[in-house]
Amino acid sequence: MGFDEFVNLVSKIKNIELPAESSHFKMVPPTRKAFAQYSEAQLKRAKRAGVLALFYPNQHKQTQLVLILRKTYKGVHSAQISFPGGKIEPNDKNLEETAVRETFEEIGVPINTISVEKKLSQVYIPPSNFCVQPYLGILRAPPKFNKQDSEVEQIIEVKLTDLIDDDNLVNKEVKTSYSVGIEVPAFKLNGFAVWGATAMILSEVKDIIKQLA
Image (cartoon, rainbow, N blue to C red; front, side):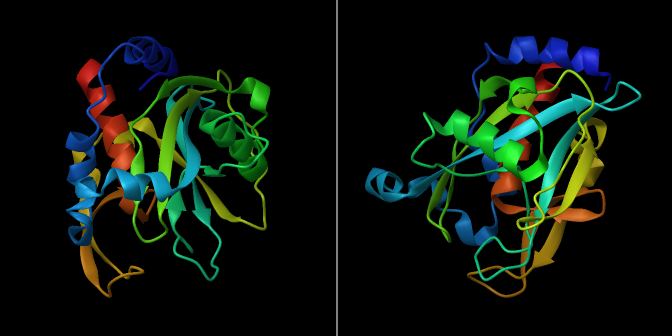
């Protein structure tokens, strides 16, 4: 999809109702089918994080988004595909600021070049007890990435056309923090299987774009 066409769609996204759970459920791992039933008390006790679904033109003026492969470490989200972002810090005014700050820190995109266009539906991640608030943002020009080597193993640039292609929806057997060898719904993007919370957020983005295109 051409970037000018995508920017035109984004102007409409601001005013639509989000599909939220109807999109998320398409990509929920089987062990988390009851995720919508978590109590308000549980959500209030959850840690908070902000992430950014960042779209931009490539050199051919086609629309892409950026994901990252996290480093391997002793933690729930080790070696997983995610959006740039992270937990809220005391100096952050809100989760939008968190998402933009972390995007700069992790992949080097200057804060003043990012335009946050839409607050998306939050996702709760039971294994790590994080409530993640995603945002949709755009860059007007191709970025020059500079990854944070201590946290980011690889920067993954995904074509928007690949995200919205239903042929890239697969079932993948993965090892999780709470089970071994379960089959989960996933996006197959750039040779990676993207599942879990990242896939749930991508599902909402995909449904919004297909609704308006």
